[in-house]
Image (cartoon, rainbow, N blue to C red; front, side, top):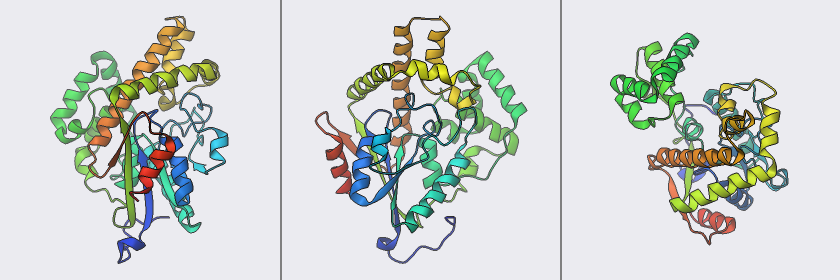
Length: 317
């Protein structure tokens, strides 16, 4: 297992490499990552909090099986959607995989758009603060009764640095930050400063994909259309036959299609909601990643294909 405080070798050139390819949903990370992995003898580790779930292939736009035959992928479809999966579990699994890949002479290539998953690999975890289910239930009740703004204002009073980093509509992270403060008696932002990252042990290269905002939104809308053609409604029907974990139940597409199936609105409205919520998610992803000055951005133009994108990244390694 990777040691937190391992002594680095003298020359940076001798450090083992870990590469990240990040960016908003639907921008084309997976296709570019496969071509890049082939160039550099890498295997891909998913950095996506929803793709860890089984039975959610269309909803989460998992890489097709034929593409996975070209380059091995890890941490895709490893958890039943009825179970919770947290960042600590993800970090442990991902770092263990890095060890195995290094022994095989492979480079770990993390690909995805979940900022928190990326952060716990690069920057580490802060000291564990156990979940308080009763406190969390109380905070969630306040969320339902008074809305995001109320909890966000509470967080801003007790932990301004955390509130500055968390989007006002990200209720899950707001609740967790308040839970940590009320449980540990210390702001989550202060605890995060004690995290131990991998920068001294490994040569970390981080790339982000971005494009014109309207172009990205058009790509997202097209992807949603393809999801419906591929049978996403039936996938959601099958998923809803079991009790989903809180995380899986919030995957974009699940609540929107559930509303259609319950007769609350027509199919076109379900599709519109998924497109809108996916665009909002992409905006939040970009807001998160733009704060990280370590990311080297690759701006994609309409004419750029995955091979061209992979080539541009390869030149910067």
